[in-house]
Image 1 (cartoon, rainbow, N blue to C red):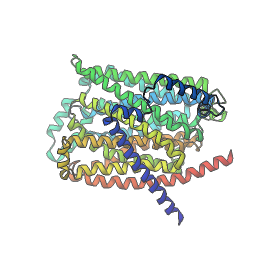
Image 2 (cartoon, rainbow, N blue to C red):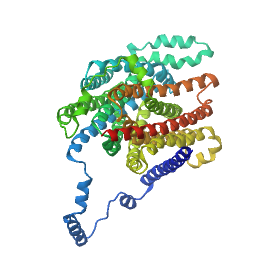
Image 3 (cartoon, rainbow, N blue to C red):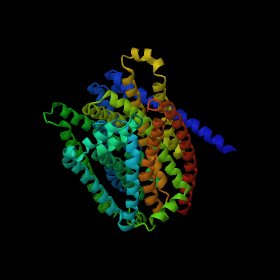
Image 4 (cartoon, one colour):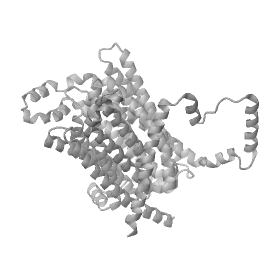
Length: 566
């Protein structure tokens, strides 16, 4: 009987913690926007200039304190990672930085391509996720299982990243410039014109056929997130990192990665600025070459860092235990059917998959509604791309703050509480966003007082919701998920991770998309289905919270068993 009370107490602590983080994030943003220079400098530890005599006195005191055995310098050195750990985590953090740099550019570019394409719009996204992304993810998982049985991890990692780099380079320099010849625009336009009014909803799926090269790019960009970020990088990191190291360094990886979000957002905005002054017939084509050039360059750096780790880190027993090196070179032996049966029988993997699927469904339900408003506010591809660049930079800045808070949460509250923050954040921010849409009419006086329009307010609030949700995902949800793989055996780490991350993520987004499609066909439009989607969101979050509590119990038991064996 004590368990429900314990969970209720823990969840209430998480709820208060999440609310504090939301308020802190908003307060931090307001401080950056409105605070005068001197208080802002003081808030960030920038001290005013001192008189020379006083400055010399403080310097002497600091030097004297540093000479002592327990001075600040000694304490700082004690907090630094040991040389062996530093040799391992530095290139890992750099790899994550460049992978996320490329992913942010791809994520912003894929939306611009499909949402602003001729005859397309935000309505195409649910159909893309269901009928293109999900089959692509399932097909890739089967292919990855075959690769894992035939080749080593090093060969699989190098081959897959090289394939992605080749595709994105080919798209920018060959496919996109010839899109007019490759797209069956006239044929699809004829079909759309012949459709009866009752089948007008088929215009969105037909837009996928009309712009099929953009749909392929969208799928490859999504797979970069599922495959290179979740599967290849985190799979490699989990094999060379211990759980105790992961608790210290995984949140710090996110710090560097979210600096990448800021820089990639700035890069996207810089390229958008170049388009404004371009005299080319198609400025977007030139921008696409610059954007994909950045992606390819980041991918090449990732490959170079991976090769460095293979030669300098994996061969050092102080950095990586010989057992981990042997495991990384092991080829898994189960076939596809045996792997599926094995994974289906594991409650641990099922709970992990539930977490990933529920996140994908939740964020998709909110995000598509927001992007429909976003296209209405920014119909021009250049303006849309520039806004997404600013959105990515803001996401990185807020996530930096959340990462610092995340370390404290892991240390003071543990894995279980950290795993509950992201669903709680989505519940709070989702409730605010849907309330604005559902009760926007009664808020007209407030909107007028703010000097904006209901459309722009919905765009801004939706952006804030996405920023807070994604920042909590990057800072807490992802580290929690990756730590959960560490106690598993090689088979579960390799194929379980492939099933959960590569299939689970698109399956979650496709599940949200199917809900939206069902609502659209039932009630006639995305706007009319908003109250039903809000109800579905809250049910999904409840399932997510239950799976997180169940996984916490299993993870704690697995860690205790691993500690007993050690």
